Image (cartoon, rainbow, N blue to C red; front, side, top):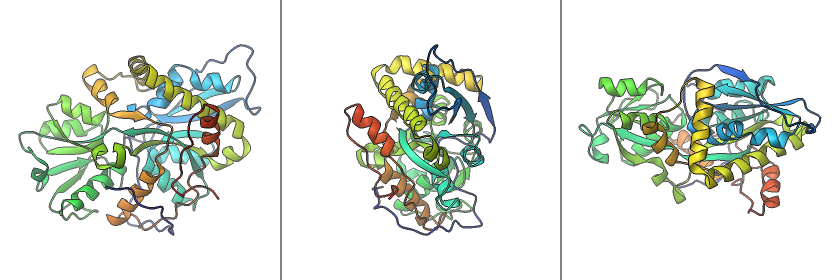
Amino acid sequence: MPAIPALRRSLAVLASLPLLALAACGYGSQAKEDGTAQVAAGAKKTDGLDSVRIGYFGNVTHATALVGNRKGFFQKELGATKAQYAIFNAGPSEIEALNSGSLDIGWIGPSPAINGYTKSNGKNLRIIGGSASGGVKLVVNPEKIKSLKDVEGKRIATPQLGNTQDVAFLNWAAEQGWKVDAQSGKGDVTVVRSDNKVTPDAYKAGSIDGAWVPEPTASKLVAEGGKVLLDEASLWPDEKFVITNIIVSQKFLAEHPKAVEAVLKASVETNQWIKDHPEEAKAAANEQLAADTGKALPAEVLDPAWKSIQVTDDPLAATLDAQAEHAVKAGLLKEPDLEGIYDLALLNKVLKAAGRPAVDDAGLGVK
C-alpha cells in the first residue's frame, strides 16, 4: 500500500453513497460540552478571546487531545482564554459543529476531513497538524482463520461503508486478487458494516469471522479470544499512516491565528510529554476517557491499544492522499481536489521554535 503522488482532482462524490465517515470510531453523532477547564490566575487572554472551543472523540486514537485536556496543556498555552471541550462520537457531527461555528478546532480522522473539505468545495476547514498514526488491525477468530489466505470466503466487519477502515480493507482485499462489490460488501470476502460498539458482540455471537477495526475495538476483540492477523501499519511506508488530524475552521484560522498557534504549541508539547512519560500519559488518557464517556478502559484493552498508537506532530499528508486514492479505486469516491486542504505554516513555526524539523504537506497545502 505505497503512498500515492499528490492528487489534483475535481470533486464528485457518488450520490448513492454515504459521506466518507469517521476514521477512529463510529459511535453515534452526539456531542457534549465540558466547560470545566481551569484558567491560571493572572493569565492574559489570547487574541482577545474569552474561549476556544476544542473538539475530539472519547477514543485512544485521540490521545493528544485526551492528555492535553487532562494535564492542562491547552489551558496553559491559551492563558486566560478558556479551553472549552466538546466530546464527539462521530466525524460528521464534528464537521457539522465546525461548519456551524460552534466548534473552532477539532481532532478528527482522515475520512471526515476529506469529506468535509471536498463537500464544501474547499471552503470550510484546513488540516493544521497531525496527532496520531496507527492503531488499526485485522483481528480474526483463530479457529476459523489461521492465515491471510483464509480470509477469503469469510465475513469481515468494518465500521461503516466508506469509512477509513472500510476503504483500507477493500483496498487490501483487491491487492489479494479478491473481488468485492463495495456497496453491497458481497464477493470473494463478505464485508459486514458494523458499528464499532457492537462489533465485539457480533464476534462473540459468531456472526462475523473477524474485523478490520481501529483501537480500542481491536483490543476488545482480542480480549474476547480474537487474534491479530495483520497490523495495518505493516502495509505503509515506515509503518506510519494518519489516523487522527487536527483541523480548524478557515474563518477561525484567519481571524485568530494566535489562538490556533497556542493550541498547536500545546499539542506539540503534549505529544512530547506523552513520549517522555508513556505510562503516566496512558493513565491520564484513561482518566479523561472515564470523565468524558463515563467508563475507563480495562487494562487488558487499554495496554495493547496504547502500544499500537504513535502520537505525531506530522500529519503524514502523503498517506491521507493515498487513502483518498484507495477510495477512488474502490469506487466509493470520484477524484477529489485536495489542493489546499493543509495549512501547516503555524505548525512549522511552532516546530522551528522548538528546534525541530518542518513537516510536509505532500503538495496539498495552500498556495
